[in-house]
Length: 256
Image (cartoon, rainbow, N blue to C red):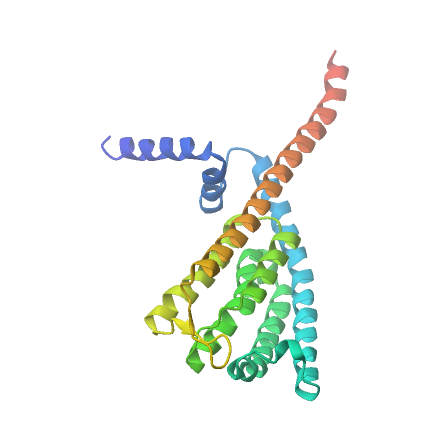
């Protein structure tokens, strides 16, 4: 009896928390709901949608990577005025970043075609996101500096939110992982400053403007994904109930 009461108490709290919007979505991603088959049907649709859009994101990532590689190759032959002020270490990091990211994208593309990719698209989503955001950070740390690549981060998070507007929890996890590395790991490694231009003072990675910019970008992306998915789930349940009613209606008429 002493065991059953705490268990029932915990289950009661979980049911209360499920009634909340954001909290309910987070809990259902960790503790799957078994109330009815509608939740299972929606989860299956969402998983298939995520897997399908991941293929598009991988190919789009290849295209974006190729265009930036061509730009840097062109800049090596015909220097672009817009890149003159970039520190030398940024240019030196380009080749290993392009090479390693391309390799990781190829791995993601292969996994996408396997049964593992179809069964666990959420993990493939995280792998793709971290390949694009964390790989340059790790290589920069190995070179002895921090890399506040705001342009790449914004591009990745916007692509994720636009093309894969489901599972906001994993969008948030991918973002928090990057911020943890940028602020946490770099702090442990004492890489808390980076040069902007030669001859100018270094800036701190804890600059308020950088932090505020990334927080708002992540918040807007996650909010957009959350609202879209909530709308899709509502429409999915409405269509399912309408189909169920249309199926039962002829049977009811026959009984009468």
